[in-house]
Length: 97
Image (cartoon, rainbow, N blue to C red; front, side, top):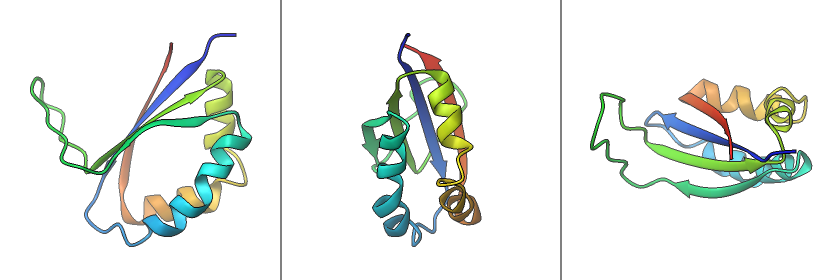
């Protein structure tokens, strides 16, 4: 089975929810075989194209696309998804390695 990657681009300005999210979500990601490859909360540049620069970017590796979908749709993750969506907007890309 081929590994799959997820890129999450986070848009928003109120990140008061982040400590609760960061304290709980990594364990849920690990439960689905995933891991953070890279996290950035620094300034993001867009040297080419017209995409809006996100406030943060996360790059994740999972064993498969199905594992990513299972994580995103899991009951364990749902409260944190709702928390994140209450304060921000996220664009997610999924692709194979």
